[in-house]
Length: 282
Image 1 (tube, helix red, strand yellow):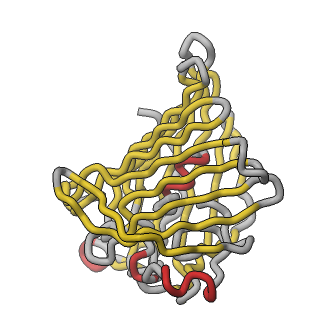
Image 2: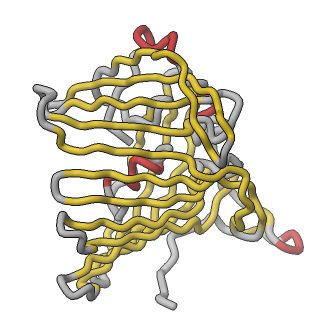
């Protein structure tokens, strides 16, 4: 399944467990249409597969899990996005089908749950491929039961994918001890990328999360033409000695911009809704 950093990128990825407070963020608001799901109509959906391998001390794969997730946009509002999520997990040949869930994300990709305070800082700039892009800089803070998170977001309303960089730091409640640091940055824009049978314009995003037990590095391809943004994603997790202990890949299997009822296929034949598919190793 997707590790913490990849979960954060799905929200981009990226998901932090925050709650949007309209009164505190009015001056620092991100437009709903610039959320990875916000530009689409309710009923848009995507189906992705994540393959995660765990490695032993010699670099051999000891276990593999396969997770297929279908996400459907239910609602776009000024306070966030509501998604319906259906998951199928396969571990050691056994299939698990957890109950479908409804998830609400704030406009920063965060999951609703706790009070969030956002402040607009002095304007900043992000450099991508030699181009200097002016950005609005928003700092978001919240405290959980045992930790505090501060995230700085570099946002451009004019340049996609709009959130061009994130810098996050998680500490204990005193703020003195750092538990993890995360950096997510758009590295390349306007690259051609094959998405199913079409060529789309994509951005390449690099994310690095350093935590107490090691480092997670993730590369993603994202497109504003695809619901949720992410097309492909590759992630590796290293322990403190630099040894790879886990690796994951995400693949877009299918997506649609309309509710998935009865879709017309080739020669006018009706195609059934996309369903979870049995994975066959190549």
